Structure formats: structure tokens, C-alpha cells
Image (cartoon, rainbow, N blue to C red; front, side, top):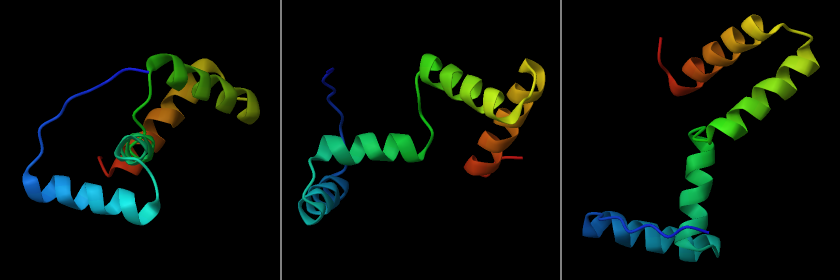
Length: 79
């Protein structure tokens, strides 16, 4: 597992530390969950997700990619 150093405002750090304690999770676990919620994945994970969705929906490569992009934009609130 990789390590990362980030700089946060003191108030954000305290809030993150408090949230991790309340949820009985590490700060790293909360950050990892947040990345998942934002749909941040490696290209390999994203490619696998599109392949599974395409197989399930019976779509061709172009249609599956178009649907995936549309859903991603909608989830992120972008036009």
C-alpha cells in the first residue's frame, strides 16, 4: 500500500480526525471511501467496470462507453 502526505487546514484535519473516531475507522479508510464515492478509479478498474456493464447490458463498445460517460457526468453533476 502506498503512503501519501497531504496538507490540510487545521479545521479540516480536526473534522477528519473526529469523523474517523466517530465511525471507528482510520483516516485512510475514510479517504479511500471518499475516493470511491467520487468514482475515482484506476483506468484498469474503470475499464473492467465498463466491460462488466457492457456484458450485462448487451451493448457494443461504443454504446457502452457513451453510456458510461453519460452516467459519470450525471453523477458528478456536469452537463
